[in-house]
Image (cartoon, rainbow, N blue to C red):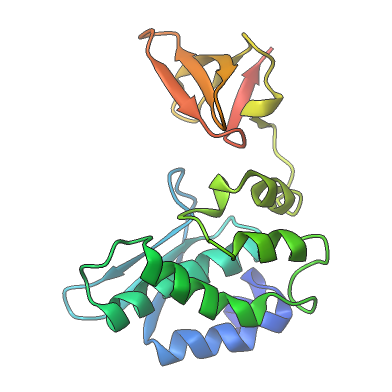
Length: 198
C-alpha cells in the first residue's frame, strides 16, 4: 500500500498518511477523474469506510483531498452522523489532521503561506479558495483549459458537458455567465476551468 501511495503523494507524507488509513480502517479506492468532485467518503452497508480519490490529482491536491475525506470519517465517528458535512466539527477535525502535513518537507514553500491561511477556516472545497486553487494548479499537468477569470467579458466558453456560455459581469466573488441555449444566468467561481471558444 505504501508503494502505491508513493505514486500519488509527496514522499514525506506517505508513511503518516498510511498510518491514518490504517488507524481509521479506510478502504481507499483511487478512481478515474470525476468532474464534480476530487474525492468522497461513504460508510458502506457492511460498516466499512470507503474513500475514493481521483487518480488525476497532483500530489499536493491528492494529499489535501485524502485528508479532507478522512476528516469526514473521523468527525462523524467523534460527533455523530447528524453533524453538517462541512460544519464546525469537520473543520476542526480537518485542521487537526492536516496540521502535521503543512511543512516544507511536504509542500513547496510557495504553498505554505496559502495553506496556513486556508486552514484557519477550511472550506468545503479547496477549489473555492481561488488563491490556493491557482497555486495548486501550477503542479497539474498542462491542459488546454482556461479559468473563467481569464475569459474576456462577453467571451464564449464551453463546459465539459458541452454547454456553451457567455461570460458576464463579476459579482462580489463569482462571475455571471449566460447559458446560450436557455438564456439562464449561472454563477461561476473565478477558477472554474473551461474551454475558451475564440
